[in-house]
Picture 1 (cartoon, rainbow, N blue to C red):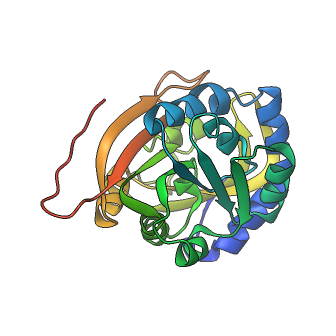
Picture 2 (tube, helix red, strand yellow; picture 1 turned 180 degrees about the horizontal axis):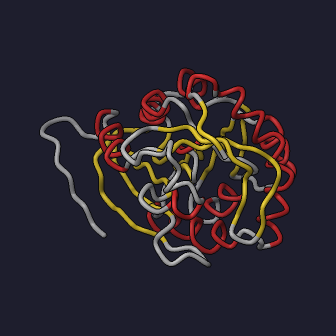
Picture 3 (cartoon, rainbow, N blue to C red; picture 1 turned 90 degrees about the vertical axis):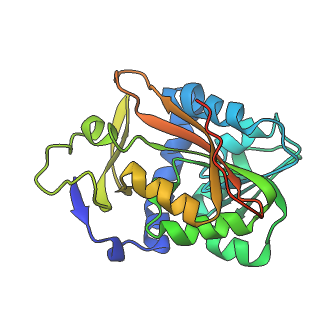
Length: 249
């Protein structure tokens, strides 16, 4: 585990990491080995999302969340820069109201502005190196008063969970890209992926700057670690006129 330069991690290089990991992720989720995915993160996203007409799954990976969400909404479109992830998503999630595209969200937003009533992003924002650009792209894909539901690692407790909170290079209030072997609570791997630590204040500031207003905030506890390991939030695209923040726990 080590810090790496944000500039050294591009959309293409991060996608290549997930190309390697994708087949393993299918097994982990379908077998139930990744308890947090099916029992913590997925249910939180569905609860916060509610009934929607069209949903964009940003960084959909192998499509498991799109498959779950499709049971509660009319139409789901999943996008991901990882070619292997999308190939496996098309193979494993066969539903008439779900489709997948191998494209970064920034490129997708240029050709699909404002068609969606909602967007979701499960543990995706912590893998992108240019968060303002991604948030701007998501905002462009949403209709007026659209909602954005996402989960992220809890910035306050994830460093302890992963074991780098006391590392000399770690500073909570600094945006840091970290390369480490991917692992879930029940098993580790040798496949190195990059995630980006950002203080919670940075997430909130960037989302507001991108034109979102916070509606719901939840801290989520996963198996085997007492503090909340994840955060789930729902934001709404800011309407015209004076902005306001309605926060419910």
